[in-house]
Length: 501
Image (cartoon, rainbow, N blue to C red; front, side):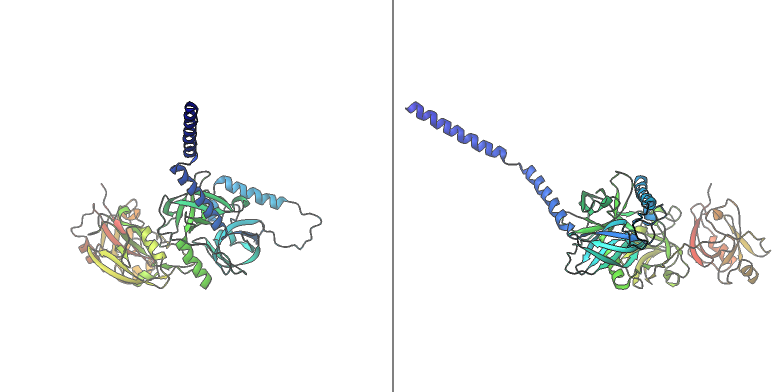
């Protein structure tokens, strides 16, 4: 009996031990628990954000225009699409155009909603945020909510530069998207895109923030567009939909893609999108602040960086746009701007970014270095022109210089301004010396200096005659470079002339 009892007891003990071991084996590891929590987080974000995402359907003004504007590539945003995607959209458009009209179809019919994008609820009273290129060419706009409800949309305003548009529908009590702070967004964070690519409504893709401050379109003027780069999959139809973080906060408006399966997409930062949307809602248009200058980053300015005194980082004022806000201010050519309203700026991009946060007419205090001395200048910003084209200078033919006092500098001949020379070169008689001839293949010709340009300063010395021009050149190291300030047909700029071996 004792032996049987011991056997039963051992079996019971072994059975209990096996049960506990099996229970422990069935319990997920801490790593698996963490993965499951992350998985649930993505599910919850997708469900929450989708409630604020809308489908934007458009009926184009012309049958030849689709959701990306001109289907044959004349839209700058359509050009950014990969070849395969452009082919896909063009094929759809051709099929629509070639589709025969049914005999039973009456001549007069309603709009054909043949384009589609995405958007988000900006406010609970029916304000929808989307891309400009989704709705700009629309004759009719229809907004479809998550529950399938359809509403006619009225385009309140579009902004081509930022590619942001605002649409109003007659609805209240909508679930507005939760807006984040794109300035606080960090590279490497999770990024989740929600939209309707290829008419596959409410698709969710996950990736990361790949980069910030990307310049997709570039120039030297005072306005540029920054983008958030992401590897979350973005395709045609995603345009206008939100890019959100793991907290379900909108950090950008999906706008552009580059390359097929390259994981490179771009979103307008939500902070910029919000500023643009608020102006469109209030005024129906966007008024941007600008200074009216052409600029370069000092460290990247090979001509001028070695001539700047007392400063290593900053933004060089290279040229004044005629009639621009800065032209009549205390700002001068060759100034190196280091701060905007007390905030450091080291690059041209940073300066532009600071100005984008201002409203047209707002004064800005620029900290700068001029001839090795720090100072501050206040400039009242102006409104960026609706259609701005860079100033072009007409190259005048070389004229035989008059036999009077003249001077030469690295292929450039200058003379005192006389009434005859002013009439010949169609310039106003004022201070400075006039360029009357340019030698071919010279340093001056390389910099685009033309007969008729007016030299007003050499380095830090003002010039009002040939004598003062010669005096300003005394002792200068031409191999290091000479800064020449010019007035070219009303456009003020400076060039660095160097003597090369």
